[in-house]
Image (tube, rainbow, N blue to C red):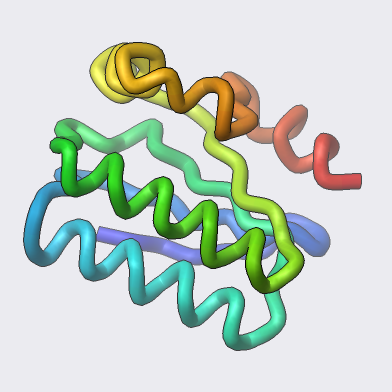
Length: 111
């Protein structure tokens, strides 16, 4: 489940539930593509309510990061659950993503 909102010039995508092979990852891919197509270049994925993510979901995070970067934008992560945080560390993606614990700080980081 996704909810999109604006905080200043930053688009925050609140994600809840599971990001897995199939619908969860497709919804995320479509949302990120729609944001970049409509000109949003500052995207923050709020993963605070993600209960589970699999390798396909991690792949979609990376694909989203790449597509936003190709469009001249930036994609960052905020509010990682323990499981998601562990996966980001295990896959060494903390070298790729800027990760924040606090949404206000994450939004300010785009300035």
